[in-house]
Length: 408
Image (cartoon, rainbow, N blue to C red):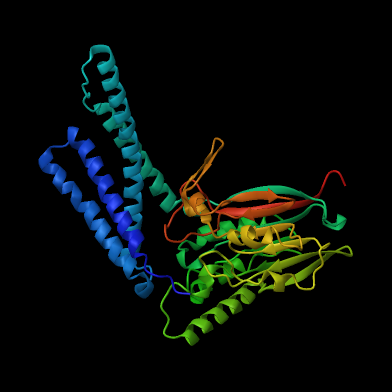
């Protein structure tokens, strides 16, 4: 599956971006002479052209330095524009209300001048946004967080009451550039003392060779009941141009060998039995199945040989698989572990607020969700891709403790 060049979305974004920039420059007109405003079009126009060109060449050239610089600068500029415009739109509403009040009280509609304080406030907030993004690019992408959940199940065997598993997802080794910081994450994983470790896909961005420098890091991860993994959409090499299909297939085979070299037991539409004190749970894993990202996985095959009464955990990279197939499957899968979304590496999770633009694509994009006694956990990702940073959505190490329901 090769991704098509998104001409229409690029065009729509370009028109929106230029319109927003025009509005922002108009608002800045109260501070900047008209003769200087025209020069302020140079940076955004240059960014847009550079990004569009490198985007069109992405499948051929990959993520070149030009692409990364233009994409990151454009993203920061765009978000800064959003904040500045939002501030000034509020001032427009204030001006309109003042005009209406004047009309009602004096019979004369006068649209007040733009409050210069709104422009200054927009500049201040935009500057804060730039600082936040700089932190996210240089520090935030390695600011690992351990997030713990305790989940209760009716069908959990008694021997597994208190059983702990650690999950990471979306390493994207091709983006990692700080081995010392990665080692800090590995140490945090091992310090959790979990019984089982699972990795839910996207070990690389595109090519198996990307993980070679980090095999020594990830091979340090050990758990008494084993380390297990599945593939994600990026692991198949669908997003770069290959010499031929044979080379692409060889890349995937090499990646599978690297999983084994690291010490991960790769589950490819299959399951294994985890036994403790004579009791069992079933751990299944599917190849990537995601709406719009390749529906390769075969859930039925992965569960073949299990019974409806078995306690089952499923590793499936894309949470859309849970929504489409898993949560209503006749054979109950008690817990599904996914990743893929990264929380878009940008959002707000503080003061009771949980928001990210990725929520417009995925119903559930981070953390635990439960429906009818079936749980889904979406890990926010260990690594990063595209945007070389994280803002508000930090890299995650998940620890889940399985408990028998209190009424048992």
